[in-house]
Length: 308
Ligand code: FAD
Image 1 (cartoon, protein in one colour):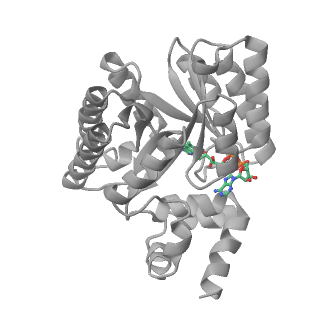
Image 2: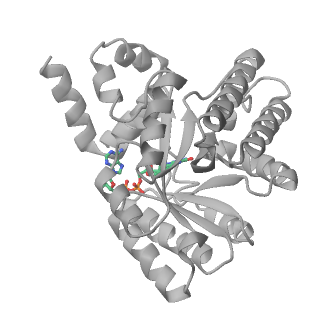
């Protein structure tokens, strides 16, 4: 119930104004977001890479409604990739993008503009010697995102995509995507979805996650197991043992600031562990989805306001 309220608030401009207007919210946001700008984020990313972690970087922003803003987002990614290359960390630092930040929701030529912007970023990623992954947003965007993925993979076969176990359609999508080398980030799903398209109960989402993981692990795809759920990580390890997959044929992913001890434990065991690092001042939607995932985060947030 609380999760659904928070996810609804994540889409509310009125709530956005109220929550971002509280000065001390920032202290809690800092737990999940690596700074407002590229300079601050680069310091965090540099430290993570030094600690043996791989990184995927998200410049926060979504639902862009002007072509100029979409182009500015694209340019910010180009600047980021150049910076990572100059810093010598690009081989461990890929980028994650939301097509809605690149134009997917514009009133005119939306898919064309989003794809052109994504192609420019893919070219820069290739030149920097790294990869990129398309985040998945709510269910209304899945067809367009998978369409863009198909286009991108023509020239950039290493472009990855996030797939949400919560959606009923995922079983079919995963089967289509389980091809040689296909980089698929399996997530549970962070958006509030109607019962007509998605599992509503957590145990159903978990079972769907395991089924999708099985399809990926038994294929020659490159599964990216993106979960903080220890049971999912243990099941992934059991499937690796069962299928005899090499340790470099898949990876684990977690969000910045969540289960950091486990992140390092996976690295110590020889697994590839990639941390999703968001940065930027448009943090509201991302932050609210993180609160919705765990009621304890809401208490942490409220306590920090009370203790000021
Ligand atoms: P859960 O069952 O939700 O959580 C398991 C345990 O993990 C919890 O008990 C808790 O201990 C810990 N935990 C989980 N979330 C939090 C939190 N916010 N704060 C503190 N502890 C927490 N979703 C999309 O819809 N599209 C995407 O493109 C996308 N990309 C992602 C990329 C990465 C690398 C990751 C890790 C997640 C991404 N997600 C994305 C979010 C995902 O869909 C889930 O909402 C989120 O990961 C929580 O699910 P879980 O698998 O961790 O399991």
